[in-house]
Length: 143
Image 1 (spheres, rainbow, N blue to C red):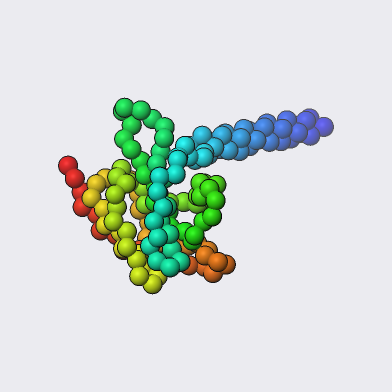
Image 2: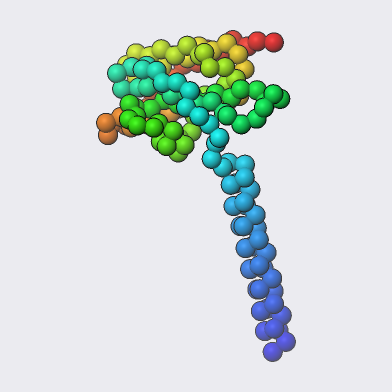
């Protein structure tokens, strides 16, 4: 019987530790990857089926640089922010004047300024059709 009591107490302790671990991980994910505090900045038609949406981070102050997030998507009616909150940007930069041009399924991005993150893979749906554009990126740094 003493072994049974030890096993039960170890089981309870391990279960409590795992619950704390999972709860801590969930809190960490929410805090660091929570919803962004962005506002809609601009919209531009790139191709017939591809539109560029740019959002600007509205938090921070004098010590926080501007952060612009670039999204490719179809023609979004209404408020695009509701849809863009569930999407990941393909480009995060400190400037809003990136030159974006497209033809067919190719999108060319030219930017002068600081780039925080970039990915050349994006997938979105336009009129029920999956579109995965080929993104070419040229960045010119500044000091």
